Every structure is written in structure tokens, then in C-alpha cells.
Image (cartoon, rainbow, N blue to C red; front, side, top):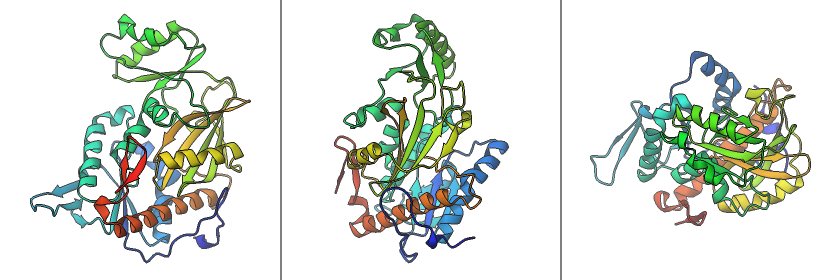
Length: 360
């Protein structure tokens, strides 16, 4: 492996890895253990193995666990004991990454994962993004409402529930201002899954009927046009660290790599770099991603990803960019964990979802 200390950070700002002598030794990523053998192999090569390598370079371990791997002994009042598998972990040496994942095959895990996230927070563990941030990031309209003051305008959005009465079309009362064609997609999935183009209200009725089969909540947004480009800004310590530009394949309304989009890592556009200050103020957490769309004339604010994928730069056999962003992310986690311990752990850096500020 190459010497990662020689890699200069990219985009805006400057970052240096902290020396690996702090108390944090473990990063546990809680992820529902429901991947197929094909998907698990793909994700390992895509980023899981690299995450573990970068963490090791920084003197820590990175491990992935299903929610049921965590057991909590609360019999000692004020002294909960937390185990990952059968190993005792403490707030001093371990942090948990506990974003919600709500793809169809993970839906049965959502409550357990969210409840575990809340238990770990109450047990005194540092969470890079606490439960409320995970909820805000998981629902696309919750994201846009929480960050409605963005200097980059949010995409107009209608949220549609799809229960047993979907055939009554009562949701259409909220679609009076929608323009067509429109994008219809799940409110909480990821990776470009389930995104469709509706050319009329009749198309929305058909898609809502299909979504009813899985109780999938939808959002409806105006389509910004063919060739709309997606920009993912990686925000580290409140600064725009890098950007991934995704361009859709010909004929596709979606720029995600899973749908054939092409990826590159250009400099951060000035408009998005300037807007980052607003998002950092509302989201005082060490790492997150903000997705923007560009329709050829202007940018639109699209989504928040607290645990956004750091995609590989496949053209580089060393994956220099992916390693650099990952290293900056994990270093920010460790530095913030150190500050959190110094400030008294449980009472430090609590997230107030009403104001979007830190409280003590």
C-alpha cells in the first residue's frame, strides 16, 4: 500500500490526518445484514475493503455489523455495558455509524436500527450523526423542509403516501402545481432505485398503485430535463472537501452509477462551495454529503446523505481520490470524538433538530 500521508487533499480547504494516538480505536458500521452474495461481493470491492484499509492506516478498525450484533446490559443503573458480538466496547474507544437504510429488502430492520441508534446515544456513545439527523436524511421531503433556507433552491416536491386507499386518488389534491414530465421516486431509498419518469397524472396513478404493494411512500418532483447532471459535495468539518460529478447515460433520467451514469471528480463549483456554509450551520456534524442537480442553467438542491457513498475513481488504480476523502472523513470522526470526550461525552454535541444547532 502506498504512503497515504503523501496524498494532498483535493478541492476546497486543507486537511491533515490526526496522529493515531487518540483514544478512538473502533468504528462500527451498523448495516442490515441482508445483502445477497452478489451484492456483498460488489460492495466489498466498491468501498468496504478500502474503508477498513484506510481506518487501519489511521490506527483504528472499521467493521460492519447487523443491528442484532449489538447487545446492551442495562442491569447496572447508570452503567450500561455494550457488547458488539461478545466484545465489550466503551464510549471512549468505539463510535457507531448508524444511518437508516430503507431499501425494500431492509424495511423490516428500520425500526430495530433506529431504536438501536437511540439506545446507543442514551448509553453515552458518540454517533457521527444522531437519530434525528438520520431521519431527516432518510426522507427526501424532510430533508428539503429542514434545509429550506438553502441558498441553492430546493427542488419543488410533493410527498405521497400509498396505503390501501391509494385507488381513491385523494393525494391528487396536492399535485395541482406539479408540472410534467415529473420524476416519481421512493421517499427513502438510495442508489437511484425506483426512479421513474411520469408524463401525466395517469402515469403517477399507475406508479402509486405499484408502490402500494410495498407500502412505499413516494415523492413527485418536476423533471429538470434530459442530461441533468448530479453533483455530490463531500463536506468535512463544515468545508466542501471534494465533489463527485455524475452524468446520466443517454436516454436515462438518472445519473447514479447503478443506472449507467459516468463519474468524475472535478473542482467544487464556486456556487456550491459558498452554499456549504449554510448546510454546515444547520448540520453540525463532521461529515455529510449534499447532492445538487444542474439542469444546464442552474443548480437545484436535491438530497442529504449523512452516510453518502464515497465512490471509487476507477480510472486510478490506487483510488487516490476515494482514499483521500475516506481518510478525511475518518479523521474528522476521530477529531470530533476526541472533542466530544473532552466536553463530557453524553452532554456534548447533542443535536437540536428544531434549531439545527449543537446544544450542551
